[in-house]
Image 1 (cartoon, rainbow, N blue to C red):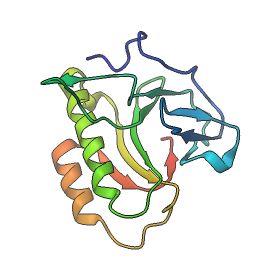
Image 2: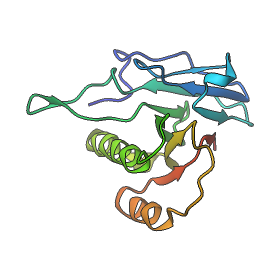
Image 3: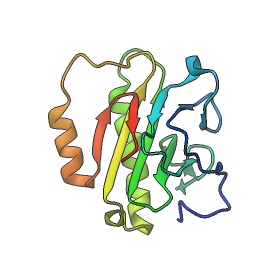
Length: 162
């Protein structure tokens, strides 16, 4: 499974200092328009060339007749030193666990066919527009996630390109 295969829907690389990620039910996308629709905000202060690839509804894994649950998309810089998987939610309640499980599922598939260690910076973002600021700590969950996957898990809407 090659996440970078050009057969998958991709967008042209972006180098804007600020853009958003939107998931309106089908393919997630990046945009500089309509900031009120952004679920996650990408801050690209160095103006790096950043690629967004939608995963959910685009890169499909069928196991035992069922489609595997995957996160919404992946961002990476063109020189492949920085990688960020993103799951976007817009709900109240028990969304953090669901987001984490989708990120885990996607990273497991990714690591089967890619050497994630090639990327110096590896992140997994769980973003929720309805809860941009979280009131409680997820330090233990985040540490366990890192120990197992070697990706830094963040529950936040701001994504900083490294």
